[in-house]
Length: 594
Image 1 (spheres, rainbow, N blue to C red):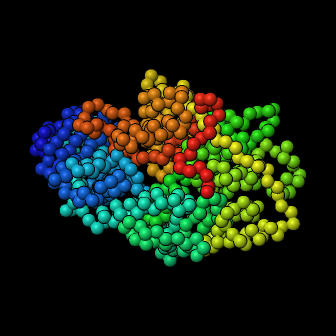
Image 2 (tube, rainbow, N blue to C red):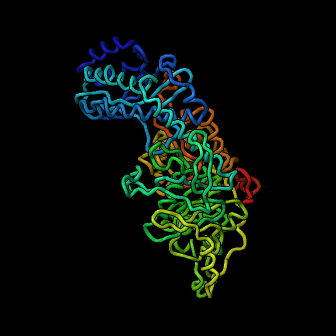
Image 3 (cartoon, rainbow, N blue to C red):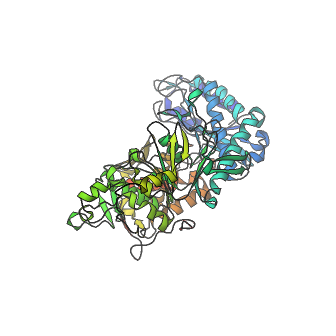
């Protein structure tokens, strides 16, 4: 059907029952693009109809250099989706009747550049997936209003975003090159024995506690590296860039309140992702295996070996395969660390503000009064360096309340007015001058053990059918269970959360949880399939359509650590030991710190 026929059909639908809109399904040829109506909503209050627009590359005319290689392709797709969203705000009228009538939307994201399935660009075509609320009065079709959306507004959206001659070429190139520089920098950190890099001039503070936009005006202080940690990289596009390189090992960030300790840590936490130009953190890069750790009272724990931190519990309870339905602050933080290491992390980010005090420190006075044989918790202070020595796991830790950590830190940064100073020598001098010092309560960390997640603990059934859905950034409904991800702080987009739920569901349906593969191996298989087939491989498909186009364009790629976090927070999760019992977890790369 061509655009003329589509217009005639919409005219005939005026005033008819809403279900008549289902006749619109299929492909519609316009002069310079094709519109696919992949799924038509059931009524005006239901989820909007799924559509795609596709422009052949010989007409679109995009420079192939903008999408050569995965990094550039992901960035260019991200750019096209943002451009399409910007055009929606400019060209779409919006409300045109009952319910969602007239709504047009696309999954365009926030400050981070993520791999999405809302756009595709390749040597054959450029495509955007979006949704439209087909207009209605009550439950009667407003065919003429629908024609205004599909025949007037949608072509304007396509013309402004999917033709190279019509876009800002410099802006597109800058977006792609910025992402390429960030990924290149992130890939170089480990070989330089660094865990993170913050470029001079970066703007780390955000506009507010509820906005990820950069702080503007005179209060936006540009970052300056301390001379002792200044390093430089010759980035592929930006060229020579200097800044602070945070070395491997244990790094302590100290300073008075409101001087930028947590702001720096937050930037490092988000540095596992690329950021859009103008964000202020475009050249803040953190190793991609970094995991933010916090206490999480009330979470469930399933057979996790927390014995490096908690042992000798009353009544002889085993902590080498520890389970609880209601973890305390210290127990949950211990489990969160072990689970992150099991998933492959070699960099932990921790803020004392969101940590359990008794997990972080047991000072010298408490050691005098309560003997170690009466205290089951071995605090992080006594294991943080053992993790590095034995497993190559670095830690960046914000600490404003306990100087005891001076004894175990390899690098100490003091934040003053949002600027860091290296005070490692001074911290060690202060620590050595104390008349009394606490005693370490751990000689070794010990082996990391792998678990096998069992299919029997993954039940997505709700009533007669399987049901998985997400709500916002922090909640997944998995069958009858509600999985709370509010404390998983490196989830940055609801589309990642949506993808996690469906990814686990898809893996369950296809037998990846076979009772033999460890959690790490299951994660490897999940992400290998996405790498090979794209995000669409995880989605339920709602009927036949060209090249699987019925899949919604609202997935963003999650990291393995956030997928693992979802699995570990399923209250029905069942896990067993790896074959042969406790097994050493093999972390990616060189496990030694040297």
